[in-house]
Length: 481
Image (cartoon, rainbow, N blue to C red; front, top):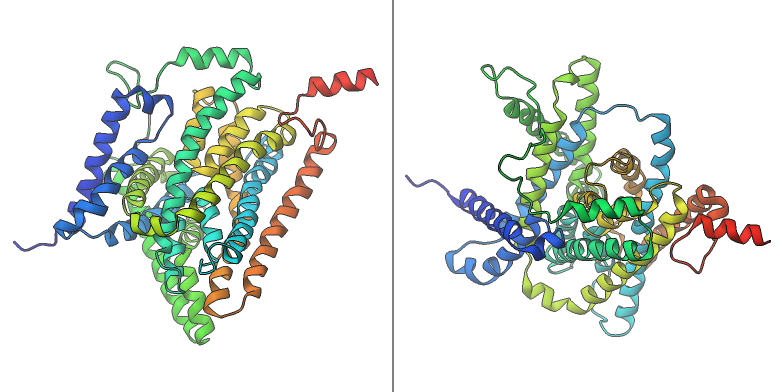
């Protein structure tokens, strides 16, 4: 029968690449040593395939871009629907500093990304589209889904290949997170930023093949929340996710119709909302979760299952995002991509140890490491790096980071809503909109700096010449005085 097999073919290709990547990780020490996620390996395996082989079989990458867009929204919904408990007071005291650490990279990458772009426009590349400056934080900090979704919207405003450019930044960010994170761990060991006991645990752990061995006790990944003969638990929890996504689609469609009544301004705002649908999807999931709490049935949600749904979404999303990168587009923007990624990587590598060693009073290196991974790759990258020095998550760092994501998300909304300003500066012929984006980004940098001074107090600029703050060094100095 003449059915459309396009979706099945693409999903089969992505799945096959993930299996091959898993085999490579299990057998090749290089991939184990540098903790390279299987989805990243699979994506690069398919990069050449989709650029040079797939077109001969009429397999276009349009589906991959659409898949990235939808999987991003699904992953946000699954993570938001999870049952949460009010954080204890001790944790709440660490949430704000953790958010400030993450926001420091948002601010730094936005400011430097825009200013470097302006310099390139004034000198070497006068035709460079100014929004590429925001492609840096979109790809590094927010990830492939957001960078593709928002970048695709810029293509209609004149930024040719913006979606693929955003995916390129995200792919390079993953590489920086993996390789740079492992280098940072070794650097921290050499400099004594990690205790001897923790170093011993790292060396005892051995290689990470990515596959649990035969006979090894396997951790529980999910629990049943239904009776299987009635409905499978995965089906039940998945129904909440996809039902919420349908509700999000319906509400956003209704909002688009209402905004269209305002004319061109309303239509443009509606387009922006579709570009940042992951925010709208998360807000819809919050609404659904509150309704479930009100009717006292939120207990039916299983966090483990939601984690698995989010996990498969992220793995497929990362693989598809890298596979869909157009090498032709990368070749056209290789210079700004190289400069921006190099600057962002160096800034993250050197600023985070300096900031985190003064911002926090416990587990400073652990916190710097997880924020570094999340600020170059994604949240799973940061947690993967943390597992190297804290394999059982015995420290509160992972939990603190998860609690802080909600606050960070709220803080980042104004920045995300201003993300189209550089693109509008071209489409509307108004350069002041570009500088308004610079001003907003600088405002974030000022906010982060003030918050850092308030939290760190006397530690703020103590031992300023040293990348790592050591309390004992400070106490010795005070004793001499």
